[in-house]
Amino acid sequence: MHAQVIAVHRNPLHGFSKTSHPFIDLVAGQGVLDDTHAGVTVQHRSRVAKDPTQPNLRQVHLMHQELFEEVAAQGLPVRPGQMGENITTAGLGVLALSEGTLLRIGALAVVQVTGLRNPCAQIEAFLPGLLAAVLDRTAEGALVRKAGIMGIVKASGRVQPGDPITLIDAPAMHRPLQPV
Image (cartoon, rainbow, N blue to C red; front, side, top):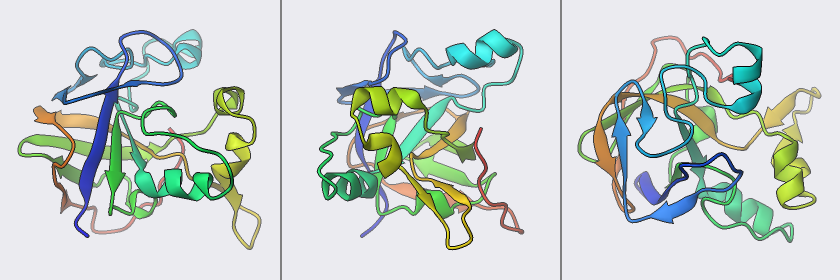
């Protein structure tokens, strides 16, 4: 299976879930047009409260369809967009990507991977048991975050379900993703 977009979502208001749309427009340096998290500087309320001048490394949130299947098998039915992602992917090992990886999504849009989404208590408030389902531990006890990845928009473009996702560049040395 080739990596592709399954669904796209945005929400102009702060809230946990995002509404599915036929397409979204990614804007270089900003994020998703008409999404509350778009901007050059941080838009997440908790981060704005700490330092509103921080660069926005969370302009676009990508989450893998495979996670929805995994949590559904645990009795936690969640649909794309409900966990707040902008782009639901399939066939792309998002969690194994390197920080700095460039992804072409659709014909024109390019997203640079910045790091992992750090799942928060809002996930548990949305659906009890979901926070534990999107976290894991390695054999050594290290925390594994499975709630998708974050990125910044490097090139503008329209993205819609069915669009291919292509890895166009990755750092020469793999840099494991850290929460951003």
